[in-house]
Image (tube, rainbow, N blue to C red; front, side, top):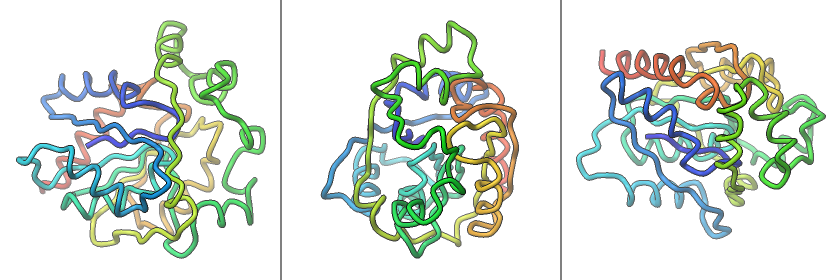
Length: 223
């Protein structure tokens, strides 16, 4: 189950979906939209209502800002594993906005702060898709759309420590600081950390590598 981030439509997963299917995996996406009324649990119910009834103990993957809803979705779906793909990791005590407002440049690249890549293709190319070849970058720019889960951004989000986590660390990320991600993945999740030499959207620039990582995560969840 793939949860898109806050700057792309579900179409942003297309290359990864193809790569996963080539490896024999079933890959599902869901369309997440901004809704000021939904908390993390509400988004989890929205996802659950859209998935097939035969989905059993899936691996749930969240990209970027969708990390704020990953634990709730993972619990609701009875996930075998959570995978955080260059994703924000909540601390379980504060909302994202409160935490980031306290130490914005510790969490994010200061050049990224205030940018909206969904309305600025140059910013998207520089911050999100800088490691893509030209054809991939042109395609990726067609997948841009803003998604803001307002309540999960404002409110504390409970983690799901009973569900194992893998954190896919994008070492060339120009949005979230990789060093912050590494620290919090260890401290907050006790996650297995897998590094990938990629920017903020490895599923776009390195889909085959990400598919292989997810395949290993799925295998470990079954063992």
